[in-house]
Amino acid sequence: VKNLPPGPRQWPIIGNMHQMAKNPHIAAANFAKQYGPLISLRLGTRLLVVASSPKAAMEVLKTQDRHFSGRSIPDALQQSFIDYYFVWARDCNEHWKSCRTLCRAELFSAKAIEAQSNLRNEKLAHMLDFLNSTQGKVVKIEELVFTTLINTLSNILFSKDFLDLKDDETAHRLKFGLFKILENSVTPNVSDFFPIVGGLDLQGLRKDCLNHLDELSSFSNTIVKERRARITNNKVVADHEKDFLDLLLENNFTTSQINILVLELCIAGTDTVVTTIEWAMAELVKNKEIMQKVQEELKNELNKSNIMKSDLSKFPYFNACIKETLRLHPVVPVLIPRRAIEACEVMNYTVPQNAQVWVNVWAISHDPEVWEDPNTFNPERFLGSNIDFTGHDYEFIPFGGGRRMCPGLPSGVKSLQTILAPLILEYDWALPNDEDPTKLNMTEKFGVTLQREKPLELIFTCRE
Ligand code: HEM
Image (cartoon, rainbow, N blue to C red; front, side, top):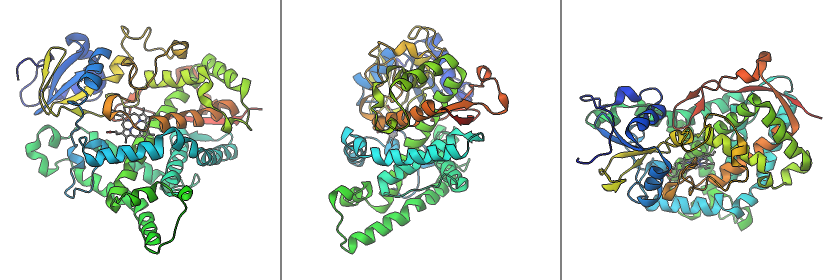
């Protein structure tokens, strides 16, 4: 193809694979410094185009949104039976559209979020009770938050808890399974780079995914079957008692379609929020003055008895801390890769059909030409600023933008606010073994979600 975006020299057969191995978001950011905001790289037979400036991001997510609305299904998810399709892994087809429309109306609209608030508060109260009973002990933040989120979600979907806070083992199994599906689908896979060997599944990722998909489907399978039986027995449920499962059944979703959508929501809606909360808490432990400031802001108006009923979006500094966490630690660092469904022109270059396209949110967030002192956690930068993550300010796009933007944004933000606020207001946090917070290790580990290399552990003490 003529007129491709510029990029580093490509080696025979492997192209640039060896240069992108460990931290591809950082490698791509470094190439962008050398070759410009739109670059091309080759990973085996696959062409990868990376957008790394607000303008290039706008071209991908707005100007050419339709052209870049495709996804490539990772080989690990190419299962032989077609019912196993993840909405995020598919092109914008009819099923994708109906899932998004239904989710938007029934899970993520302002009305839906309001209707979920009692449930959310109930699960939050369980979390705080659990913390009160483990005072002085080391708590793994990811497990605590994961169980709380999964139970909130499973109640919204099915009116049932999936997990028990005291049952580490099942929580661990579920979390591990969800994580493995996600990890397998982004692990560099020879089958993706050289489709000619795809059928061989040389790394066994496809098989491993299938095993986890099967195991995890069993969590929802039984529930779906019971519900179908109830409907067949003509048990009438009042509209206000219907949950998301009732709606899916009314909309003629098959059991496999339901299983996969549930899994999808669990994968997309837990890891992202858990990781962001971990980063936010790590930054607040590390930056004592910021923590004091946000505590003061919340303390002025909130206490144990009114916190669950309050509108948490009205606390500017608290929300600036959330935004700054999403800026400095964008949890989906290169968005979910897009695929060009047709060739198109971007910034005077040609992006051929089927090229994979990344928007390097991490690079934009860490670019000193876009953000002053970009590596410092400084919530103040968002005070008095209109910049928001709604997908229109291309310097700050942690939820992506355009037609494939994260549909779960309202729910994700609500979870971040409702989980963080009581933890900040009601507890003092300390690191285990009297570790010095200013020296807390902040190393990242690349994946679909940019996690902490070392999971965060804290000891909570109730504040008076
Ligand atoms: C801090 C929280 C979250 C962040 C930062 C986040 C970020 C993202 C990003 C960057 C994308 C890709 C967008 C693109 O390609 O332009 C995405 C897609 C998606 N997210 Fe989220 N997300 C979060 C929470 C959630 C929640 C709570 C749910 C649901 C319960 C969810 C469901 C989805 C789904 C289904 C997609 C795929 C959309 C599609 O392909 O059309 N996310 N998210």
